[in-house]
Amino acid sequence: MSQKQVRTRYAPSPTGSMHIGNLRSALYEYLVAKSQGGVFVLRIEDTDQKRQVEGALQKIYDTLKLAGIQHDEGPDVGGNYGPYVQSERKHLYLAYAKQLVESKHAYYCFCDKERLDSLRQSQEHEGAKYDRHCLGLSEREIKENLDSGMPYVIRQKMPTEGSVTYHDAVFGEITVPSSELEDQILVKSDGFPTYNFANVVDDHLMEITHVVRGSEYVSSTPKYILLYEAFGWDVPVFIHLPLITKEGGRKMSKREGDASFVDLIDMGYLPEAIVNYVALLGWSPRDNQEIFSLKELEEVFDIKGISKSPSTFDFEKLNWMNREYIRKMDLDAFHAKAIEEYKKASLTETTADLHKVSQLLRERIEFFTQIPENVDFLVKMPDNYDLNMYNHKKMKTSTENSVEFLEASYQSLAQLMDWNFQSIEKALMDTVETLGVKNGQILWPVRTAISGKQMTPGGAFEIADILGKEETLSRLQISMDRLKTFNENQ
Ligand code: GLU
Image (cartoon, rainbow, N blue to C red; front, side):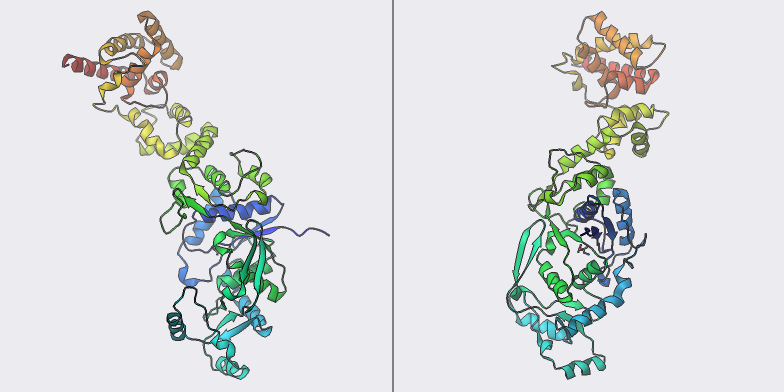
């Protein structure tokens, strides 16, 4: 028998920006399909018209594109199973719901809001359920109500006895007693289906073989199983994903302002690093490899590697990963991206050779937004930086001896005709030798004197090279003057 083609779908509701849980669902859907040569579908679930957010659909497209998670079928690219937007499929659902009414798996309910509200109030306990009032209506009453145009919903009729069991690829066997299942609404009075109904009808019509989604759906899935059974349809493989928590164990949530994909991008993380990190939030490869391109993930991803225990979103790990990706970047690509940050810091080509700056930063930063704070000293020497930096035990330097070291360095640098890394290095190392001191005794004061900072990307040679001769000498002079005044006043 030939194997059915694997088809998965990412089915977002356009209600805001894509948070990390959404991105992970999309990614895993994509990987489940691609790792098995399958098709990945994008379906927009917009049946809850009140929750729609302007612009949210565009954000979904933009995020998927940026993340490199490309769908094979969807509203924008088409396909043989369209339309791919649920509001455009509205006409389909009612017919299927009526079919269930016919087969006695569903029924019309005419209860108005007042009745349902008072019912809810009278039932004090949590999880109060619809009391099946309309299940008692006669055929004639139903017909009269329908003929008179009375608003109605269609409810699923749950079994009253026994239990429903299904197999989840991650959580194993899940059993729920039927008594816990409410006669949920399938079609609302505005004619739109509920998510609970539409997802089943569409997954069937779109021939979805694997349903991947958050674990909040584990407990509703038995209701869907009953729908599949009522229609006599094949049940897809269910893959519910573990919770994503933040440090301390609380659930990551949009409502609590936790970072969305776009927020992370704005914070300076690379899309590839975020995708790689998110891939590992709930899935582990067979070995200990951690850095994966999307292409590699498509090859090695395996449903068996998905874990059921919650995974913690760990910014430190993401930072590490981002740094790994930055280091691997091609210098031109790094530079093109870094330029935006140089602009923010007012660092221009006239102040420094920006390519050289990029070369240094690529080895140093964890994310791009750290660039301005790393290059500000190139634009302008910090006024009044702390002269105590010269008092360095390990380097054997002090505010006293640094004056002499800086003067000697100034002399040899001032003589240079060619100003480049090698010539600067040679001049300063010659100074070390002439004075008979340790390397650090020259390099530490020089770097401090021309940067005014405790930490800089690159050492004395690199920074002097980037600043140029005139600026380097001028900074050395300013620092020596400050040191002298300081020492005199001690
Ligand atoms: N529209 C649902 C959501 O955004 C989809 C859940 C599913 O994948 O079935 O949560």
